[in-house]
Image (tube, rainbow, N blue to C red; front, side):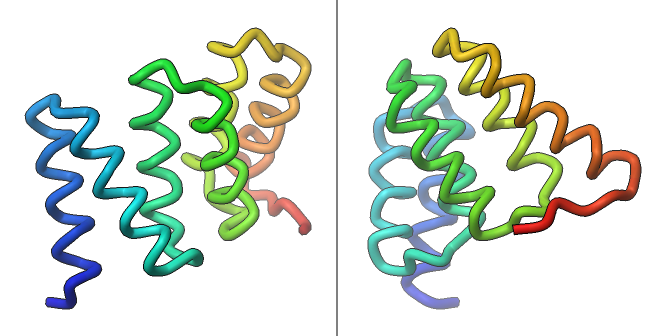
Length: 109
């Protein structure tokens, strides 16, 4: 297992026991090491949302959807982030993309 995988697993373990700050730190370390690490961007966004850092969460969520535009969970998570931030139009757009994917469609980027 690589050091990056170890860091990601550690962040996941921290998240599992409710240590959100350690999880965020671990996921940040992952995306700094590998800016194209989709799973780390997605997890970082969700962890940041749980800590109330909504603007940064949305940025991470957007990175995840840029890296994997056809990932249903990435769009669903981004929609949740927008809702919590009160950006309802953006949330509806992200939800619409998730709906397209859930029906077997694709998002073109």
